[in-house]
Length: 205
Image 1 (cartoon, rainbow, N blue to C red):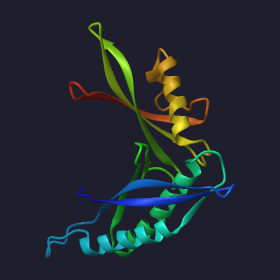
Image 2: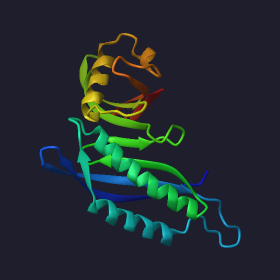
Image 3: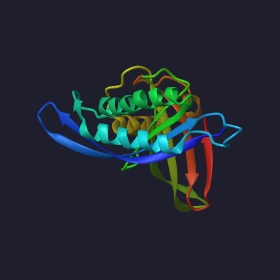
Image 4: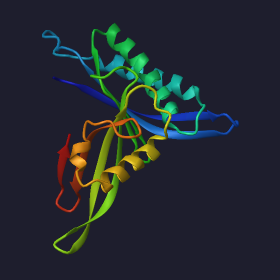
Protein backbone atom coordinates (compact mmCIF):
# COMPACT_ATOMS: atom_id res chain seq x y z
CA UNK A 1 0.00 0.00 0.00
CA UNK A 2 1.36 3.40 -1.04
CA UNK A 3 1.53 5.78 1.92
CA UNK A 4 2.35 9.47 1.85
CA UNK A 5 4.00 10.71 5.06
CA UNK A 6 4.59 14.26 6.26
CA UNK A 7 6.31 15.39 9.47
CA UNK A 8 5.76 18.69 11.30
CA UNK A 9 7.15 20.12 14.58
CA UNK A 10 4.62 20.93 17.32
CA UNK A 11 5.16 23.07 20.40
CA UNK A 12 2.68 22.01 23.07
CA UNK A 13 1.87 24.04 26.19
CA UNK A 14 0.33 22.36 29.24
CA UNK A 15 -1.36 23.89 32.29
CA UNK A 16 -1.15 22.14 35.65
CA UNK A 17 -3.53 22.33 38.58
CA UNK A 18 -1.16 24.69 40.44
CA UNK A 19 -1.03 27.11 37.49
CA UNK A 20 2.41 25.89 36.44
CA UNK A 21 2.97 25.84 32.70
CA UNK A 22 5.30 23.57 30.79
CA UNK A 23 6.20 23.25 27.13
CA UNK A 24 6.98 20.16 25.06
CA UNK A 25 8.40 19.82 21.57
CA UNK A 26 6.97 17.02 19.44
CA UNK A 27 7.46 15.88 15.87
CA UNK A 28 4.20 14.61 14.41
CA UNK A 29 4.48 12.14 11.51
CA UNK A 30 1.24 11.71 9.59
CA UNK A 31 0.57 9.08 6.93
CA UNK A 32 -2.23 9.09 4.32
CA UNK A 33 -3.26 6.58 1.69
CA UNK A 34 -5.38 7.18 -1.40
CA UNK A 35 -5.67 5.26 -4.64
CA UNK A 36 -3.66 6.77 -7.49
CA UNK A 37 -5.70 8.65 -10.09
CA UNK A 38 -4.88 6.92 -13.43
CA UNK A 39 -5.34 10.17 -15.35
CA UNK A 40 -3.19 12.50 -13.27
CA UNK A 41 -0.91 9.89 -11.71
CA UNK A 42 -1.47 11.64 -8.37
CA UNK A 43 -2.55 10.20 -5.06
CA UNK A 44 -3.10 12.56 -2.13
CA UNK A 45 -3.18 16.26 -3.04
CA UNK A 46 0.10 17.47 -1.52
CA UNK A 47 -0.91 21.13 -1.54
CA UNK A 48 -4.05 20.37 0.47
CA UNK A 49 -2.13 18.11 2.86
CA UNK A 50 0.43 20.84 3.56
CA UNK A 51 -2.33 23.42 4.06
CA UNK A 52 -4.18 21.08 6.44
CA UNK A 53 -1.07 20.41 8.52
CA UNK A 54 -0.13 24.10 8.63
CA UNK A 55 -3.60 25.04 9.93
CA UNK A 56 -3.62 22.15 12.41
CA UNK A 57 -0.19 23.17 13.71
CA UNK A 58 -1.36 26.76 14.17
CA UNK A 59 -4.58 25.74 15.95
CA UNK A 60 -2.98 23.17 18.27
CA UNK A 61 -0.11 25.45 19.28
CA UNK A 62 -2.64 28.10 20.37
CA UNK A 63 -4.30 25.64 22.76
CA UNK A 64 -3.29 24.99 26.36
CA UNK A 65 -3.73 21.34 27.34
CA UNK A 66 -4.79 20.80 30.95
CA UNK A 67 -2.88 18.46 33.24
CA UNK A 68 -5.19 17.01 35.92
CA UNK A 69 -3.01 14.17 37.23
CA UNK A 70 0.60 13.63 38.26
CA UNK A 71 1.55 11.78 35.07
CA UNK A 72 1.89 13.28 31.62
CA UNK A 73 0.14 10.36 29.93
CA UNK A 74 -3.37 11.92 29.81
CA UNK A 75 -1.96 15.17 28.42
CA UNK A 76 -0.12 13.42 25.59
CA UNK A 77 -3.27 11.40 24.88
CA UNK A 78 -5.23 14.65 24.59
CA UNK A 79 -2.77 15.92 22.00
CA UNK A 80 -2.89 12.72 19.95
CA UNK A 81 -6.69 12.56 20.02
CA UNK A 82 -6.89 16.23 19.02
CA UNK A 83 -4.65 15.61 16.02
CA UNK A 84 -6.41 12.39 15.07
CA UNK A 85 -9.85 14.03 15.10
CA UNK A 86 -8.92 16.73 12.59
CA UNK A 87 -6.79 14.46 10.40
CA UNK A 88 -9.51 11.81 10.09
CA UNK A 89 -11.98 14.54 9.12
CA UNK A 90 -9.57 15.88 6.47
CA UNK A 91 -8.91 12.38 5.08
CA UNK A 92 -12.65 11.71 4.76
CA UNK A 93 -13.15 14.97 2.85
CA UNK A 94 -10.37 14.00 0.43
CA UNK A 95 -11.54 10.40 -0.01
CA UNK A 96 -8.31 9.25 1.61
CA UNK A 97 -7.42 7.22 4.70
CA UNK A 98 -5.35 8.20 7.71
CA UNK A 99 -2.96 5.25 7.95
CA UNK A 100 -0.50 6.34 10.64
CA UNK A 101 -0.02 8.97 13.32
CA UNK A 102 3.14 9.13 15.42
CA UNK A 103 4.19 11.67 18.04
CA UNK A 104 7.91 11.77 18.81
CA UNK A 105 8.78 13.78 21.91
CA UNK A 106 12.18 15.47 21.71
CA UNK A 107 13.65 13.27 24.49
CA UNK A 108 12.79 10.06 22.63
CA UNK A 109 9.33 9.00 23.84
CA UNK A 110 7.08 7.83 20.98
CA UNK A 111 3.28 7.68 21.03
CA UNK A 112 1.73 5.80 18.13
CA UNK A 113 -1.93 5.55 17.24
CA UNK A 114 -2.59 1.96 16.21
CA UNK A 115 -5.16 1.97 13.40
CA UNK A 116 -6.18 -1.57 14.33
CA UNK A 117 -7.10 -0.60 17.89
CA UNK A 118 -9.88 1.45 19.43
CA UNK A 119 -9.49 5.22 19.20
CA UNK A 120 -8.40 5.64 22.84
CA UNK A 121 -5.68 2.98 22.66
CA UNK A 122 -2.12 3.99 21.80
CA UNK A 123 1.18 2.21 21.51
CA UNK A 124 3.91 3.78 23.63
CA UNK A 125 7.52 3.28 22.54
CA UNK A 126 10.47 3.83 24.88
CA UNK A 127 14.15 3.10 24.27
CA UNK A 128 16.96 2.58 26.77
CA UNK A 129 20.58 1.49 26.39
CA UNK A 130 21.66 -1.37 28.64
CA UNK A 131 25.08 -2.81 29.31
CA UNK A 132 25.72 -6.34 28.10
CA UNK A 133 28.73 -8.61 27.79
CA UNK A 134 29.93 -10.42 24.68
CA UNK A 135 33.09 -12.54 24.67
CA UNK A 136 33.99 -11.03 28.04
CA UNK A 137 33.78 -7.46 26.70
CA UNK A 138 31.27 -4.82 27.76
CA UNK A 139 28.96 -3.42 25.10
CA UNK A 140 25.77 -1.38 24.90
CA UNK A 141 22.52 -2.76 23.50
CA UNK A 142 19.51 -0.64 22.64
CA UNK A 143 16.23 -2.01 24.02
CA UNK A 144 12.99 -0.53 22.69
CA UNK A 145 9.76 -1.47 24.45
CA UNK A 146 6.37 -0.96 22.87
CA UNK A 147 3.42 -1.25 25.22
CA UNK A 148 -0.27 -0.45 25.35
CA UNK A 149 -2.76 0.25 28.09
CA UNK A 150 -6.41 -0.44 27.25
CA UNK A 151 -8.61 2.56 28.05
CA UNK A 152 -7.44 5.57 30.03
CA UNK A 153 -3.85 5.45 31.31
CA UNK A 154 -3.12 8.00 34.04
CA UNK A 155 0.43 6.80 34.65
CA UNK A 156 3.42 8.81 33.51
CA UNK A 157 4.46 7.14 30.26
CA UNK A 158 8.17 7.36 30.99
CA UNK A 159 7.78 5.99 34.53
CA UNK A 160 5.57 3.17 33.27
CA UNK A 161 8.14 2.31 30.59
CA UNK A 162 10.88 2.07 33.21
CA UNK A 163 8.67 -0.16 35.38
CA UNK A 164 8.11 -2.47 32.41
CA UNK A 165 11.83 -2.51 31.65
CA UNK A 166 12.55 -3.47 35.27
CA UNK A 167 9.99 -6.31 35.02
CA UNK A 168 11.55 -7.59 31.79
CA UNK A 169 15.10 -7.45 33.22
CA UNK A 170 14.10 -9.37 36.34
CA UNK A 171 12.30 -12.13 34.43
CA UNK A 172 14.12 -15.27 33.28
CA UNK A 173 11.33 -15.94 30.76
CA UNK A 174 10.76 -12.42 29.46
CA UNK A 175 9.54 -13.63 26.06
CA UNK A 176 6.52 -15.08 27.85
CA UNK A 177 5.55 -11.54 28.85
CA UNK A 178 4.83 -10.51 25.25
CA UNK A 179 1.12 -10.05 24.64
CA UNK A 180 0.35 -10.59 28.31
CA UNK A 181 -1.22 -8.17 30.76
CA UNK A 182 1.36 -7.12 33.32
CA UNK A 183 0.62 -6.40 36.96
CA UNK A 184 0.20 -2.68 36.21
CA UNK A 185 -2.51 -3.42 33.63
CA UNK A 186 -0.19 -2.79 30.69
CA UNK A 187 0.12 -5.08 27.66
CA UNK A 188 3.65 -5.58 26.38
CA UNK A 189 3.39 -5.40 22.58
CA UNK A 190 6.98 -5.94 21.42
CA UNK A 191 10.65 -5.75 22.37
CA UNK A 192 13.33 -4.70 19.88
CA UNK A 193 17.00 -5.25 20.70
CA UNK A 194 19.62 -3.44 18.61
CA UNK A 195 23.41 -3.71 18.58
CA UNK A 196 24.81 -0.30 17.56
CA UNK A 197 28.24 -1.80 16.86
CA UNK A 198 27.04 -4.33 14.28
CA UNK A 199 23.94 -2.31 13.30
CA UNK A 200 21.82 -5.45 13.69
CA UNK A 201 18.49 -5.79 15.46
CA UNK A 202 16.03 -8.42 16.63
CA UNK A 203 12.31 -7.79 17.04
CA UNK A 204 10.25 -9.93 19.43
CA UNK A 205 6.47 -9.61 19.31
